[in-house]
Length: 226
Image (cartoon, rainbow, N blue to C red):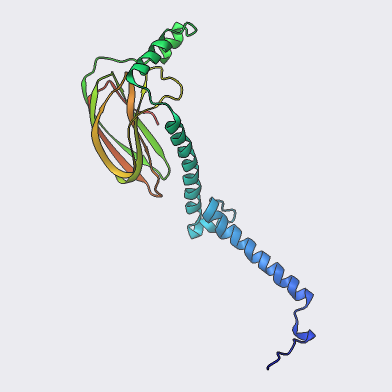
């Protein structure tokens, strides 16, 4: 049996050496935190080293994506919990809003949409979306009017096609379809009611994305609202 020799007192580190090693380790850890961890994870770069190493932009993108994800989850939760109304319920809600006695004539004129006779219109727009950014295009359409569309992007995006009626009730949501991580889509929207109908895109990637939308149909206004 082999017995190891116990280290002598002189072989053990002194208290001063232990304190010095601990201080050195703390200094190294603090430097790593300031120069790499904070810039890479949170976009905070007090020394400028993260910018030189290319870590600060990565941290800013992470924080922006995290914030956008929280906001998108809140929007999706609200949409999923919102009641989907039938055409009859939409018309009844519109009549109720129009007949409220506590709304002045001036407020009605400011909030009402101006809907003109439908005409065949064509439009095309290009939208640049930074990482985490969203954009929305709305067309003003009368009930029963149709528009054909085609959009494509050079990167995957999330899309929500929906409509808002005139004087929409609180928490109202009427969807025509959704897509996740797709790069193109085409089809036709037939307005379920008088109001605004269109597309909301969100760039969930870490690269800039270009979306091109083409439309043709019966609508009186083509507008980017976000």
